[in-house]
Length: 413
Image (cartoon, one colour):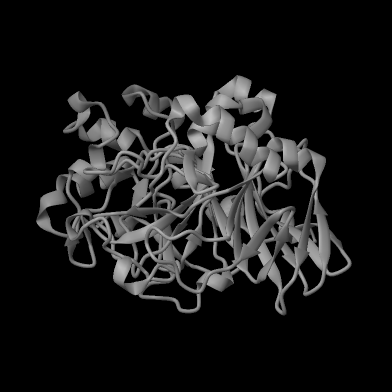
């Protein structure tokens, strides 16, 4: 558990010292999140004895969140569940508090003025098998319960996918021609066992080193590859599948982010789905991602792994930086990012980078960094000091770039 926490009203001084010492970089502690209704895939480097560190009744830890200022919407949660903490001189402070204290310095004036927070986050999402066919509410529907919508994206890092686990396929959307009445019938059959929602969908085999962009309101049942997931800073969802691998999905997980008076209104529940996007006959063409090289040089390459727009908006993007042994690269981005090292060791500015082999619950690591707007725009030197490639994934917030590739642009290369 996180200890030695600086209270929010005292963050200013330690934040200034940390940013000055790190030249705009903050070292972050691992943020672990359990899910009571899922089965951990055990590839996120957590010690085998520590997957139930929150208690068996909370479920196993199957997620690690990165650079998060978003709460995990779990029943029985600890007060800071989902929130990232920076570590400096043996003391922890919340990234959320740091952004509130020095928003312009950390995420840039324009983003802070518009959102007053770091509005995105990412995670490793790691399960033994598939999870229920579900969607994340649109911004309009989430607003009905004082929440925000959640578009998200996937990238399947080879370094965290040494094995497939039980079902490396993801059902996405609905088959073209599916009617709302057919989905409504699935909801009517909720208590009969398997309600048959997957019979209306199509699964896609998951491929390491590729990804997907999933708009809000679109059904998806993520498969068993460990997934890096840049997404909007919200934890809303609705589960539309009643039984997964013999495990019951309670109705409460379908309606948890819907107005209470609509919890039995089947037409309303079906209506929260973005119908046109679900039955899109060109679903893969409009949502599938393969890496696109943004820049490369002597011993290094920087690739887009998440790109495209959601309903016309650039909400988040992600890149994969790879350096060969001995290589150096001056990273310079137009905005802040959350970085996780997935292979090798090296140096980022004044901070060491090291990919852990195993992490004890509550232990510190040297793999995660928040790159402030100040540091990103000034430039940070990254060096591979090891004998294997150094690779890091970083995700960035809304409207960071003047332009980004469109979904499908990888075909033009």
